[in-house]
Amino acid sequence: MYAVIDLETTGLRTSWHDRIVEVAVVHVDEAGEITDEWCSLVNPDRDLGPQVIHGISATEARRAPRFEQLAGHLAGLLRGRVLTAHNLHFDVSFLLSEYQRVGIQVPLDPTNGLCTMRLASHFLPSVGRSLYDCCRIAGLPPYQAHSALHDARAAAQLLGHYLTATGNPPPWAPALAAATTLTWPPIPVGQVAPVHRRAPGSREQHFLARLVDRLPRLNEPQGDAYLDLLDRALLDRHISATEADALVATAETIGLARADVEHLHRAYLAGLAQVAVEDGIVTASERHDLDQVAELLGLQRCDVDNALAAACTGGIPQQRRRVDTWKFQPGDTVVFTGAMQPPRWEWEEEARAAGLQVGDNITKKTRLLVAADPDTMSGKAKKAHQYGIPIVHPAAYKRMLFNLGTPTTAS
Image (cartoon, rainbow, N blue to C red; front, side, top):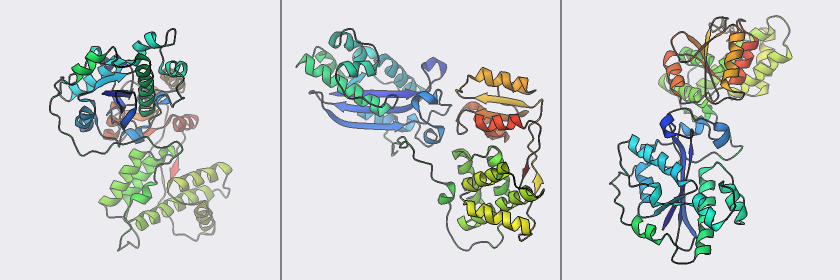
């Protein structure tokens, strides 16, 4: 009978190239009972906009199917049913935009569906426009806002409240009949599994776990390409999902097994430990940095203890050491991307005050891209990856700004 939908998007307007990042559909029968539900994240192939609102990370979205991969299955969930949403015009405009983007014309029109927000003026007089207010006044249970599935469930329960109040047949019975006559084009249904949000507090699997544990193992694995990539990834003391994927791919390309990579990680940590003990004092800051690197590499605090002890006694071979070629200097060009707090213009003013140039777009002269989410799929990030320009989180950038012009030493 009814297909209640909700979307999370990168912004408010399709005319600003905003895209869907999560879609949920809840089926409701003529009695107002929920009979089925479906939800998936959607890869928008761009930055995710106000992530603080919808709470979806680029790590999750970049591994989700694109809209065209879900288009056929989604059409099957909507076909023959009355499209319903809280603020139907908004959801329909985005669905139409996404289908049009892949060259498919679908029979969606806000005038042919039900909007629980507009119906509230009849069933819930004097209530506010928000879904939260409508559900509260209707006596419905609280829900997790800005999650497509939870919002769709709440709207479905609100529709059930309306159906109970109006009796049978409802005043929108003609819309029910019209929905069954709408002609949908044939859209292939791909074999793509939906991707759901990560449970709150769950962590990304460490990239080491994705490496193959195979034989033979190398006695002294030659992993310069891997270590060079690791240098860039650890520039901001954070390994993003994009960087983790690249490390795994590089290890597999040059034939490194998991044990080989663990060997390289210990050698890398040992090199850092050598640098830390050179002046005879390991400061609290240096120890914290070593512990942080060890955790990122899948090692333990005891591995740091062992590396420092070996470095102090000369019990390890001389490690490859170099002054990192990446130096943040006055006059360098920095570019910002993503929705930031405080606003981006404040970050840009601070950068200029520190003697940096601020660019609007990525060029080969750009020194650094600061991204609200380092896994962002924005156009700026794509160019940065193409040119080999580091992408860092704002917190890491602040540390770099504090040490502006100071060379860093890496193993």
